[in-house]
Image (tube, rainbow, N blue to C red; front, top):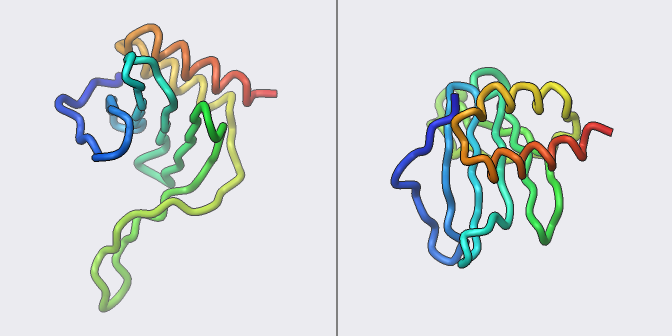
Length: 121
């Protein structure tokens, strides 16, 4: 079940964010000055091969894999980065999101569900 991290880290120059997390999903929602969502990033499969689906009003969708920056021999762990990955199973992710989203504010859950549903076709 997703739970909100309070306080969420805010990045200067970016819209205010709310961050929700569970063992397998992270959801970051960006809000405008009127507290309306302007976009979100849904990170899933955190324990295996993490991916991030991002949607914003301006840019639409992007789907990336997360390179965790795991250490290689004789090197330190690097910062995780997003790398291109076009494979996206919208139906599976929507089902998983619905199981985790019962504790989310309804308007946020509905936004993410609508955007995931749009990718099912």
